[in-house]
Length: 116
Length: 116
Image 1: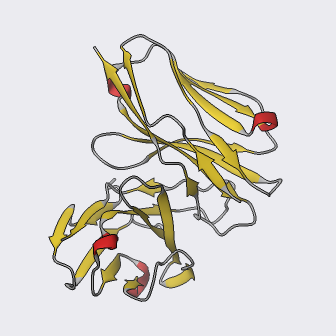
Image 2 (image 1 turned 30 degrees about the vertical axis):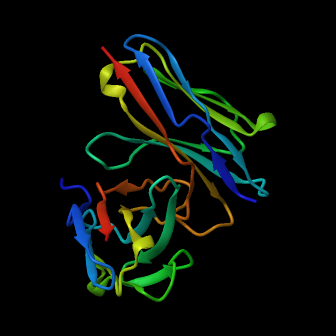
């Protein structure tokens, strides 16, 4: 069974450009999460999808970030325009259980974004 | 404030040594969950354990053991007879019961290097 996959694994862009990150969750997982780790800092929650609906987007830094999950399958996270402080590793995770007690998150390997 | 502190940034041991990774947390909630994740060189975070705040029983899984002490707000992780394959970054995380699903509060991680 395929795990959570993220594309690309690395992206180097210039300030002001647009970048789109993609996450393919494990098939059948309704819950999809995005997280970010800025260098030297903690991994921070960005948002949570249940199928195609945004359940919690309290962690999104600002309106330059747009996450979508059309059809409730894969998700994209677009940064437009990118700023230097957006550099970091963006993780995606998915889970099957809606029960918080039993939920187990499966993470992807992340996308390393470098904004120059 | 809700926070997870992993004071050890990097630890280096020689194979077969025992090693303990420290985790101290802060939360206002009485019900919460604590986690440990492993991030091997491949990049993805791998779930190791979840502990409910009402269950202070220590847990052992093979060479891994966890010591949860509410009195000191700590959830330490010990690897017995470490192996080279244990080399990874280890993250401790907190989830408040009242918080939204998947909204984990991570520590900065401890990089463990096990040398042959």
